[in-house]
Length: 274
Length: 274
Image 1: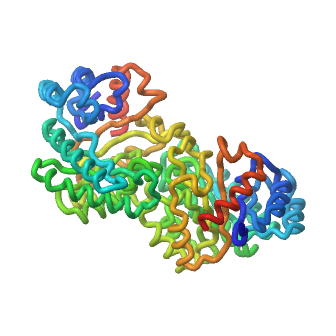
Image 2: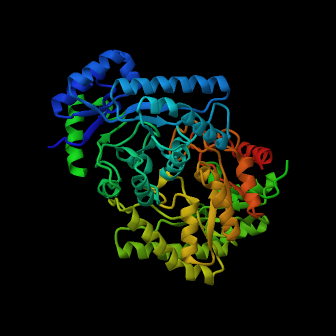
C-alpha cells in the first residue's frame, strides 16, 4: 500500500482525534500530508499545530477554510474580510500550499443570488493583496449546487474559473469530486483549469446512493457512484501533479469508526482508485 | 385571488386524494389545469381519468412522466422505450400539452455517466417518431444535480437544450425552479430556451433551508430562498405565456395537511409570487 501523493483532510477524522492526535496517526500510517481546519488548529493553538506538523514532517496540501463572504451589511462583510486575512496568516504559519475558500451563500433573509455572488467577488478581491503579500494562493472550491443557498454560491467549475479570470493571478480552484462529478461539462472545465494553471487542489470523496443527509453523508471512495479513474485521468491530463486529498464528512458511518480503521481504509481505497 | 395561469401538479396532493378527488377539489377551488402522474391515472383507469378531466373542463399542462431510459442491457432499454410509447399514448388520451421526461440516472451498478447520457439521447430519439405521430411534445426536465446518479443525468438547462438541438423539433424543456434556481447561467439559458421556442413547461416549488430530505422536502413558494419574481421575469422575457405548474413533494409537511388547505395555500402563494 502506497501513500505517496495522499493527503488527509482532517475533517475526515474530526470526531475521533484532535489535530495533534490526527497528525501523529497519519505519521504512524505513513501519510505525509494533511489539510487541517481552522477550528482544529484553534483547539490546540496555532503555534502548537505548526510545531506538530513540522516535527512530523507533514506537508499541508491546503488549509480549510476561508470564505463565507456575503453578509447583509458593510460592517458584516468587513468583519469577514478581516477574518479571512487572519485565515491567510494562519495558513502561512502552517506552511499550507493554499487557503481553501468556501465562498458562502445567500446572506440571512436574502433571496438575491446575483448580489451574493457579487459580494463573493468583492470579498476575494479584498483579501487578494494580503494573500499575495503572504505568498498564499487562494483556492476557490465550487460546491455542489445543493449548497448554493447556505454554503457556497459558486457551484460549478466553469463559474469558479470565470471568477479566477476576473480576479487575476494567485487565485485558483480546489476540485472536489463530490461537488463536481455530475457536471456534464467536467472534462472541458478541468482541461481549462489545467491550461490556466489554476488547479490548486484535488479532493476525493464518493457520492452515495441513497444520500441520507445533505451535508454529512459523504462516501469513502468505492462505496458510491463516482468514477474516480475517469476524473483522475482528466486531472492527470490537465497536468496536475499535486497531492490528492481525501475529505469525507460522514456522521453516521466513518466518524463513528475507530480512527485507525478509517486511515487504513483511506489508504486501501486511495490505492484502488488512484 | 386569481387562478388564471395556474396548474396543479397532482403529486402535490398525492397523499390526500386520488385523481378524481383531486380534479374535483381543483374545480372547487377554481383551479382549471392539472398535471397528473401515471400512477395516479393507473389507479382510477385511463378512461375514467380522461372522463373526469374532460367533465371538469381541466386543461392538462403536462403528464408525468416518461423517461428512465438507461438500463444495463438492450432488452431492458427496449422495454423502457415501449413503456415510454405507452406513456405518450396516455398523454394523448388525456389531452396533455406535453409528456414530461425525467430521463433516468446511472444504470444499476454502473459509474459510467457518459454512457448513461448516451442512452438517454438514444432513448428519446427512439420514442420521438411515436411522439410526433401522436402530436405529443416531449419536455425534458433537467433535474437538480443531486439527482444525477439515481433520477436524471440531465442536470442543467444548458445540457437539456443541447440535447434538444441534437434531437430536432417537437422536443423542449420543462423548467422547474427547484432544479435550476442555483444555476449561474440561468438567465442566459432561459433566454436561449425561449428564443428556440423550447419552453414547454414552467414548474414552481421552493428550496428550503435547511433541506431535510433530498427528495421529499420541497417547499411552498415563499417558504424558501428562491426569487420567483426574478425567475418569472426571465421566463416572461423569454416569451413563455403558458401555464405555471405548482409541484411540491413534501412528506413531512404539505402531504400531511388537509388537501383543501394545501390548495388554498397554493393559490395564495401563486398570487403573491406570480
